[in-house]
Image (cartoon, rainbow, N blue to C red; front, side, top):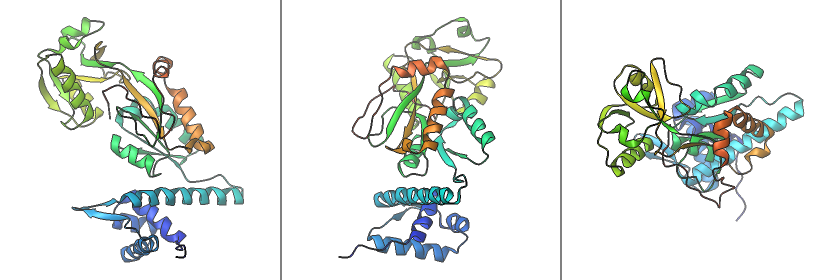
Length: 319
């Protein structure tokens, strides 16, 4: 059977659709009608002989083949953009995309983002994600690089530890425990804690550690995301366990909890991604921006060298 002819236009449309997983928003970005977009996607699926997306309840999601096609489509479009820019003798305009969560954006990546955007406006686009979304974005080519704290390292991505911090108890400066230089889990007995919702990894791991240590505690409030956690702590609602990179708001102090494992942040990318000098430069900037003590602590952690290697790191993770 002859090889199928795949339309570059349909590939470009599928890359945009894969970013949104929404026909209305994708069609608007492409400046075409929804029926036209639907026709392009149907033609691409027919040419490839594979379903590329399906409906799950009220949402659309990519199939495994759809994720592979999205990755290829994004790579194809990026190579085309870079080639045309080089041919015309002008700088490439397609921005690099970095995927991360609250903590990394607030305390690890801020200087890098400000620096790159001041040097060249529009050169970098942050993508705010949770841990699973970050890995999917990197895996499918939606993001060039991810930065997150990980528990289980993905086997198909390259993960490099870049910063490692102790876990800290965040509390009012006048709290009795604030006079201590270091704490242990037993010091949290009876504490009212600000915690994430039940399914979040940090909540699961913190509950497990406290249960294993036989420590009783209560929920002060469930908070989604670091900013809300800090706001509730500043209001005096309860105490919170956070990564050591978090800067306490005015009136609060943080003390390390000696018998909780450290939190390790990783830079995550696809194999071969650093062959692109722009991605390699972004990666180098991120590593250089990490404070030296956290960088030295991370240097002692195992590094994944490719899809065949998997490593377990600290069992606590932060968004």
